[in-house]
Amino acid sequence: MKERNKPELLIPAGNLEALKVAVIYGADAVYVGGDMYGLRAKAKNFSMEDMKEGIRFAHNHGRKVYVTANITAHNDDLRGIRQYFTELKAFGVDRPDAMIISDPGVYTIAMEVIPEIDLHISTQANNTNYETYRFWQKLGAKRVVSARELSIEELIDLRNNIPNDMEIETFIHGAMCIAYSGRCLLSNYFTGRDANLGACTHSCRWKYHIVEETRPGEYMPIEENERGTYIFNSKDLCMIEYIPELVKAGINSFKIEGRMKTVLYVATVTSSYRKAIDDYFNNPSVYDANRQKYTEEIKKGINRQFTTGFFFGKPKHEDQIYDHNTYEKAYTYLGTITGEKDGLYELEQRNKFSVGETVEIMKPDGNTIETIVIRMKDDQDNEIESCPHPKHIIYVDFGCRLEIYDIIRRKEE
Image (cartoon, rainbow, N blue to C red; front, top):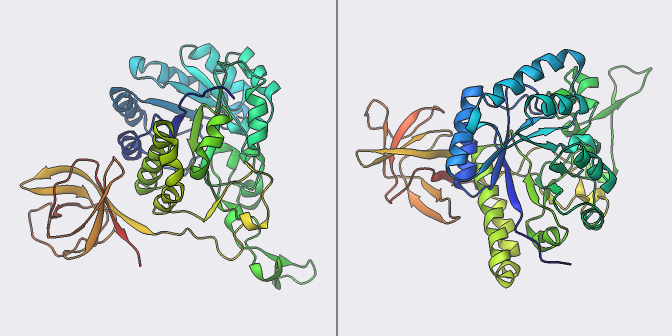
C-alpha cells in the first residue's frame, strides 16, 4: 500500500458557536445546514447571516465549510432549492467550499446555478461500490461519502478502482442508523415527520411492545432474552483506535456525525481525533501507546457506548443497546469563555454551577486544568453564589489564566 496523505478531519456544527469551536479545536473542515434542505431540521441550523459569518471565520483560519442540501426532494422543493443556491452564490468569497447533495435533481440544479462550488455526494445516495463513484465523477462530483455499511476491505477495493483524484469521505464516529445509509421510513410512518426531508424523530431509539390485533390496549413486551426491548437502538460508532486501518484504506476525509450535539461534544470529539491523527502521522509508536487514552478522552463527551459498526464485519447483537435509549454523560457542559472583564472571565452559562465547585477547563490543544470556582458576578455586576438560569451572561474568577474558547465542564459522579 502506497503512502497516504493525512486525511481531512470533518466536524459537524449545528450552529455558529459550534462551528467556531470546531475550527478552534482542530477541524480541517466543518459541515453545516441552512434553515432548509438539510437532513437535520431539528438542529438550530444557520441563518444566511450566520452561515456567511461562519464561513468567513473558517476561511480566516484556513478551514473549509461544506453545506448540506441532501434531502430527498419533491417537486415543490425544487424552486426553493434553486433560490437557495442563488443566495449562496451571492456570498462571493465567503460562499461554501462544497455542497453535500444526494438527489440527482438537486445535483442538476447545483451544476446550473453554482458550478464554481465543489459538489459532494451524500451518504444518502447509497454509495456502496466503485462504479457509483465513477458515475458521479463523470458528472463532475469531486467527492462521494461512502455508505456506513462498507467494511475496511470494501473501502480498500473501492479506493483501488477509482481515480486518485476522486475523494472518499467516510463516517468514522457518531450515531449509527437502523436504516440503510440513513434512508429511513419509520419516522414518517409513525409520526408523519419524514427523515428524508430532515424531520427524523429517531424512532429507532424508542422502546417497543407488541399489541395483538384482537387485544387492543394489551401491551406484550418484545424480549430478546433478558437483554430488553430497545430492538433498533445501536451503539455509537467510534474508530479512534483504528486510525492506521482507515488511513491505509485511502479515505480522504474522516467524517464525524453530530449536527444536533452540544458544543462540549464537538470540542471533545474534535480535539481527541485531532490529537490521534496528528500523533499517528508524527510518530506511530506514540499513537499505538495511547490508543485507549484517546477513547477514554472521547468518552468525556456524550455517547451511547461504542462500536466499530460495519468496518470489521456486519454488526452483531453486541453492537446494540437493548435496555435503555439514553446517552452516557461523564461531563456536563457549563459554558465557553467569550471574553474578559475586570479580571473575571465572561461566559454564557449553560448549566448550573456554584462558587466553591471543582470544574475542569478544556483547552483547544487538548490539555485540561482542574480548578475551583473562586467568585462569580451576574451581568449587573452583582456578586452571586451560583448561576441557576441557563443562557445568562456571567463573569467568573476560576483562579487561573484562561483564553477565549476555553470550555468549562464538570465531571459527573
